[in-house]
Length: 197
Image: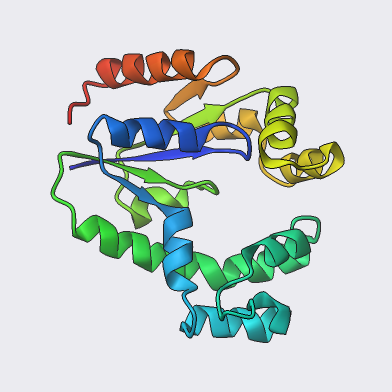
């Protein structure tokens, strides 16, 4: 089995890539979906988050208030560190469990906050960075997610740079143009890497 990480900063288009890969028949294990699973109402992880950040972490229906926590930590390095220390282990365990259920020849793992330690943790063959210039990413966040420009820039600045992502990944795919062009680049990369469903 070849396991390949897909990573990219906010507004880069990594979700567009994983959606396209799924449409081609490739299985994708997504860290964001893992977060949803490990923060289900009543879960141990959600209780720990409530202890760390207060009752506002939980919505009135018992679900995880991810928007509140994201806003709380994105400009606070200490709070973000506490959040990551709580969620990353639970997410990692969930990803490992999901990977163990798959027998496909090629599996993609969507990891927004990819770091070299994930290679051994998830037995990855390689990693692909989806990158877009900052100005394009800002425009996407403003136009598609309704963020104000200053928040979009702060979110991008709080993450590692495109240059660092490219340095730690075997493949980089530029997503500064249209969705059609992005999909063509993914097709070309699949062909170059000899990856077949």
